[in-house]
Image (cartoon, rainbow, N blue to C red; front, side, top):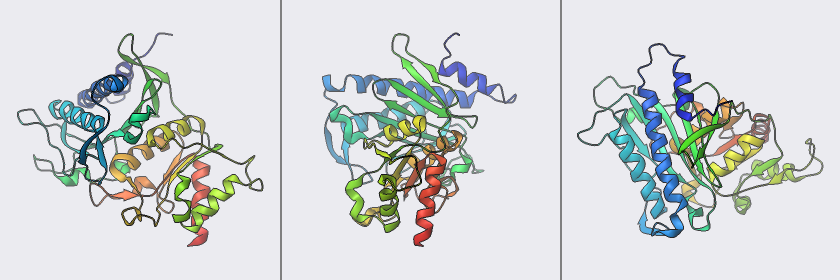
Length: 335
């Protein structure tokens, strides 16, 4: 069977829509180009002056890595010149980003985390890019923040790129979740994981147990349950936590399992969760559901949340469907 590139795959999916103009395909092509450039820089990061901190803080109050900044600029420039977006939001930027002056505006809206897991850059652990795509909803010619503050159920596409032992792009346009591995010999993403289906339950849990003492009792009891020999599972779950959301999610997407970043009372900025709704939770929840999994705050489906601000934080419980359901049951008992 001949290798299928991501571009060919996107074009095949476009045939489902006779009235398609190719603009959406063009937007995905822009994202692919940006991903290839970032992948190249990640591969040689230790050889050039791109490792380490810039000395600045982002809107989240986090120290900015040089590669963070590079990835943010790369995505903003390529999408801002592509003619397919009318507005963007980045985890690294306080305000919305508009098309670059002199370039046309399109009908799509993109929210992205240019480099997730950047604290792992200097130790050569896997990192990634996450993106979500909506259609413009405002009637006026110019876009506004209202175009960005849309529910996850209104997403028309989402994906991530993981820069690890190989570079893999996983995306969905609403017809299943598919993975493509970058073949450096030809410079193309080749279909390697067609129609990914996450098992209904797994045997792995991913959570930062250093925060155990700051969790609600329901989450403590759930984690204790996973590790117990007396649970209703086949055996105690194994702990696997990389500290890079994309990497932890990718493993569990393929093998089954659950990732948790619940709210905690250690940091007043995290009492409503740490992870960002628009840039992290929404796109990954979309991919999880397209793969047969689930994503929740513990009390609410992630894709049903109406954002109220660009950098809104939420608790995130995501992965195999039955594993997420059990967490929700533990939380419901404590309410």
